Each structure stands twice: as C-alpha cells, then as structure tokens.
Image (cartoon, rainbow, N blue to C red; front, side, top):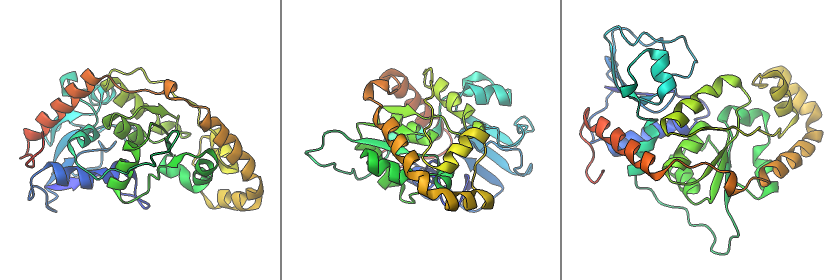
Length: 300
C-alpha cells in the first residue's frame, strides 16, 4: 500500500504532515511502494486521475475542486471518512462518511515543544499560503509586526507544530495552519486566500467542526500581492517577477501597511472549535483509522 499525497517543491506544511502523521500513528510495515492500493490521507487529494485499477482508501481527505469530481462509485474506492459535508455532497456519498480533516489525528502525536521566552508580552504567529510566498514579503511583514513567521515550506513539520503550539493565537492564510492550530487548541484567525479556488475547502472543514467561518481580508505585502488581489491570479510568472524587480522599492509601503493590519488582530477575533466537537471528531477519526490498520503503541 502506498501513502499518497500532494508533493510540491518547495514542500507544503499540510501535505508534508502526511509523512510524519501516519508513520507515528500506524505500526511499521503498513506502507510500501505498491501502487495497487493507495492510502489517501491529509489534503484536497480526491482527484479524478488515479488509476481505475488501483484501490483507493480514503482516510479524511477532501475534494478541493482542483480536478473534475472523481467517480467514487466505480468499485475502486474505500471511503473510511472524508473531511467535510461539502466533500460528501460533491462526491454524492452519505453524510455518515463525514468526520473531519485527518490532520485532527495530530492530537495523538508527541513532539518536542518550543519554549518561548519567559518575559514575552504575547506571541502571535502568521502563516501564509505556500504559493503566496514567491510574490509576497511575509517574512519582512512579520519582522516589522513582531509576529512569529510560520513558514509553510519549512520541511521540519515537528518544528512548525512546536511553534504553533507556543503561540497565544495564529493568523493564517493556509488552511492547514488553522486546522493544526485548532488541533493543538490554539485559537486562530482565518485570512482569505487571494486565489479563489483555495477557499471552499476551508468551509468544508469548518462545517465539520460546527464552525461558522468568516474570512478576514488578506493584506497586500508587496506590489505583486496587490496585483494578485486585483486579478485573482497567482502573479508568480516571468512578467510578474520583472515587475517585482522594477518596483520593489515601493514594497516597503506594502510591508508596513500589512504589518499594521496584522498587528490589529486580537485574540478576541479568533476561532476555536468547542472541546466537545473536537473530542468527538478526534475520537471518531482514530476509531476509523484503527478499522483499517494497527495503531502504534501508546496512541489513543
């Protein structure tokens, strides 16, 4: 059985979580490189281009609209659970298959915690969407605003989890930034991704956690960020890079304005799922996982 997830260069936090999550939750020997059976976990990876001959085990994945809707009724799909009600509706499957995003299972992981300075006043984190980094100046914004920069392309997943856990609350343009914050019981503030196709999946997850999601506008951290907001495009092509290079001197204006915007958020603006919903969904997800494999010792 092959662990299957979206892989990118640079890596993306939510997708990279798959390597760490399943290797620590499931007893060794469960995965190999045999593509006759695919294990689909964290991510919007319910795509239409998997081999019809391969068996697909779905463990908390979602449909994100990145491909046409797959035919999960062709006999090759074993849906243990999916991310949210919108995924279930799109796939035309029973709502009993809805639990939540598989990343909630990070509740059962153990990892070293980052210890913040004892004399700190507050600690607020910010995670951008990984695709916004090439056009944006988020590291500079965080430096100006004295925010913890949570780099979604950081390959060390445990380091990112530790940094999230050490925050009083986080602000995130990345969906799995808020999902992992919620899982670690850290309040979070959602920033609307500039590219529209990345938005619906947030509501899919939020509704699985009985949350009524309200996005905040994402400030512009550079001239290309401004163009992306206006056009709805990624603004990462050769022409965009040329514009960025020629006009980079005015980026400091955008950086300062974005820093001011992010600094105005308060913990009272943040979301956190209720303890009862969180405990119910995490227990149900672990039970669903244990129905397909042996859980590692000490988990649960």
